[in-house]
Image: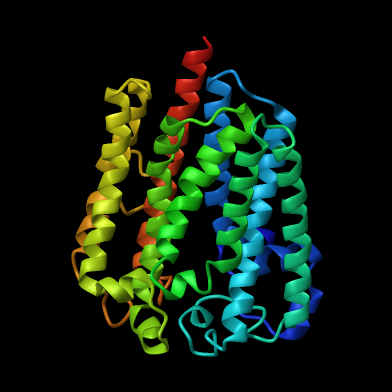
Length: 337
C-alpha cells in the first residue's frame, strides 16, 4: 500500500478496509504522497545550490526538507477539507472519479482531517521557526515564513477561485522553496538562484495547469475560476506549451550568462526524448497532444482516465526534473573540484 500510495494508484476501498490500513498508509493516502516528490525535488535543488556555494549544513538541510514537505502535506489535507466542506468534491466530481478521497468517501471525518493538518502544520512551523533563528536577517526569514503560510492557508480558497492558484504554485515552488530555501541554508538572498528555480517550478505549475484543463467543464459549472476557466480551454493549452518551452529557454539563458555550467544543457536530452526513463511521452508529443482539444472519452489503452493532460504534464515534469537535478549534481561536483 505504501508503494501504491507513492505512485498515486489507490484501489477503491470501504471504511472497513481503510480502518485496517496502517497509520503510515492512511497518512500517505490522505496527504497525497505521490505529488510530494515535486516538493522534495524543489528543496533538493535549493540544497544543491547551497552545497555548490559552500554553504551546506546537514542539520538545517534535513529540517528544511522535512518542514517544507510537511507544509505541502498540510496544504493537501486542507485543500481536500475545504473542498469537502464546500461540497465541491461530491461523488461524481472529477477527483472522486480517479482517486480515493478519505473525506468525500467517508473514510475520515472532518475533525480527523483538521487534527492531522494541525499536527503536520505544527511540525512544519517548528522547523521554520528554527531556520528563521539561524539566518542573519530575521525579518526576511519571517517574511518568507509568512508568505509560505499565506499560500498554504489560502491556495484552495480564495486564490484558486480567482485564477491565482497557478500563480501561487509557480511562486511557491520557485522563488519561495528554492530561493527561500537557499536563503535559509546560506543566509544569502540570491536573485540568480531564484531565477534558476523557475525552470523546475514551471514544470510543477504545468502539472496543476494540466489538471485544471482536464476539469475545465466541471470547474466552470461550479464557479471555480481557475486560470484555464478564465483563459479558456484552447488558450490554456497553448499557455501550457509555452511554459514547457520556457523551462528549456531559461535554463539555456542561465548557461550563457555563466550562472549554470554548460553541463546543464543536458536538459535538452528530455526535449529530444532520450533517455525515455520509462516514459513514453517526450516533449514533442506533449506539444502535439496539447495542440488538440481533450477527447470526450479515454483513448484506446489509456489507463488514467479521466486524467489526461495532467498525466502528460506530470510525466514531462518528472523527466525534466530528474535530468535537471542530475545536471545540478554534476555541476556541483565540478564546482567543488
